[in-house]
Image 1 (tube, rainbow, N blue to C red):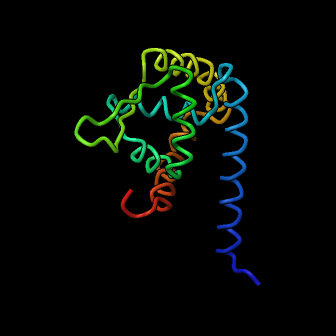
Image 2 (image 1 turned 135 degrees about the vertical axis):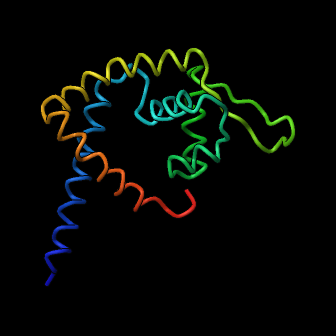
Length: 148
């Protein structure tokens, strides 16, 4: 028999997983043609970081294998949305930066995502959203593996 705390934990994570699935589907439906949510996420991260990242750094940031990140980066490079260059000091390493076309694609995506997520915030209410953000951040930090 499970305890009330176990039931609460299962209910919490069930809700989080369902919200994740629904949010991904809602955002994925409005993304520009040819863009996947993973593409947007990497472009958005690179746009915010304002500099170059290695594929390994990006893989760690997104909690992906290097192979999965390499696959995403290959698609982004083929679309012309990122630039990949060798590390001039260490030929085994590469650096990734968002291209002007990638920044434009990210901005186009953001312009169609914002009304979708804004409508959700509007239905729930900004005050409720603000009140839950610290809890969600604490959950995220408690789930983040040590060293990240």
